[in-house]
Image (cartoon, rainbow, N blue to C red):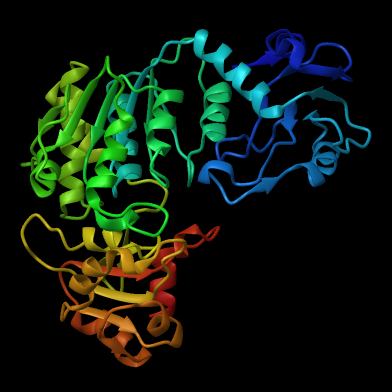
Length: 429
């Protein structure tokens, strides 16, 4: 939504302490925090000098105040500030609290629109599933907006909504992620889903200060569903945890996408979960089986989570995200029981403690088809026994020995700008 300066001051009310903006410009964007969907060529932007000390575990802390004046000067933007922030020669609105301003603008945007909101939570596969639901809805002919960030926080959700949702926007799809116990509940309170899906639970979040066991993870994620809404939970999750169906939820069994094909997707349980959730949503929205088929067969995974490459004439799935146990184990949960050839060039668990999911790592790295490049860093970071091999044998295994279903892992590689997995594999290996 676009906001004029006068609209913002009216919505903010007594939060405004000083108005240094000439005339009444209309802002294309209200820049609460940076999100990837922000256009590069914005001419009219109200750039908020927000800051955080990492309260609530949503972020590691950030502070836009020291650089706000330069950003505004370089871009020709206006500033939203709190008292004491340097502004240089830029025009600005000074408010008591920028977070409160964001909340007021968000509340106004919510009142001006009424989209149907689809929420997905689980331990792994959320990003790809939400992207598929976006593609499914768009294939049906409806407009849809997907909220995505590496880590969605209340501020980034508000930023997405204020800037990317119009009065007539019919659908929003979003993943609801857990870093601390109350995060899913807080996101659900901020943006309540009309329909929720809980796809799977793994050991990923079992770390000091986070969760002690998978039941705690489940209890956190099941809070995605508001009382007066639809909710579907994977029956497999309830069976594994020995739990009864939560009140007002419905269960689903994962279905294999029979007679459908998409060569860009791996033959795994995650793909089947994605398809099943899509089928359930299609039923809720009265979409035809033909639309579901077309959506599945034309879907391209996003955010470089699943990248299929041609490496020396072989099809290879490139896994360039973190080495989290549930992520790597997902490649092993195949629909036909086949194990992948897994070649691990680089291990990095980012901010996760691998001891929390060491049981998954043991199963992954005990496979005789899993090979790890022998480097000091890999030996230091991997807490379980593995088949370490030197560079020559590692490359030879990829080129000559591995066949069929092959996965290559170089942690965090696809987060690098302009990284090309296929070009990298063929050039280096």
